[in-house]
Image (tube, rainbow, N blue to C red; front, top):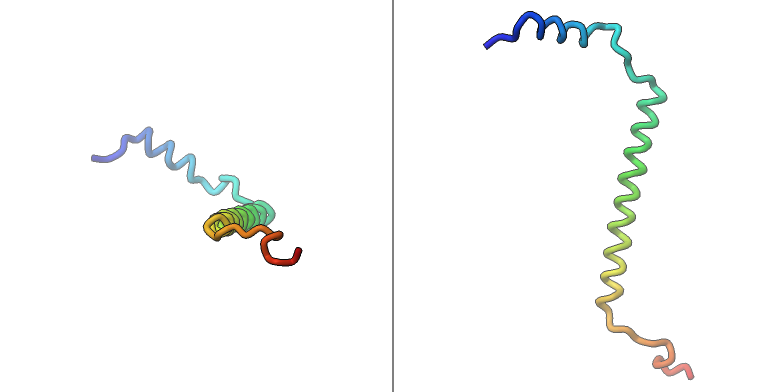
Length: 68
């Protein structure tokens, strides 16, 4: 059913136009932080896949290549 009058008053007070808005600098920094976090996560995934691929290859020591 409907909300009580006191709940509606609270909702109206919180959605008033005097509510603080994010500045351009805050939005820019938040987007930059998100992009850096995604890039870092991508690098971690690439690193772990490279390490797994390296461990799957048969290990050949440098001395067994016939150079010495």
